Length: 68
Image (cartoon, one colour):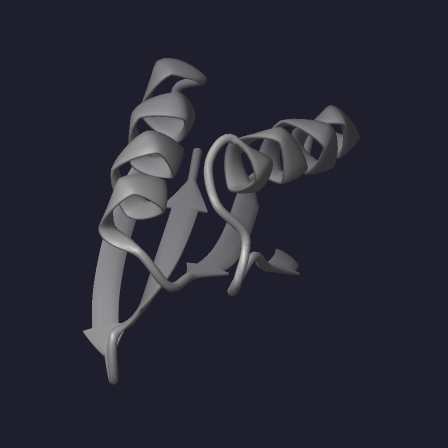
């Protein structure tokens, strides 16, 4: 599983970061974001690429786990 930390970044940077990571064609990714817009945009992008997305929130940070 490839893990990414996109805290402090505003959109579209987390999506761009995930898209670059997805070139490795792994079956699972995890990304941490710290705002709702990034959570929604990353979820939308991952879903469009065929990934199932699960989200957990802790202290205002969202951990998105994506699996194919």
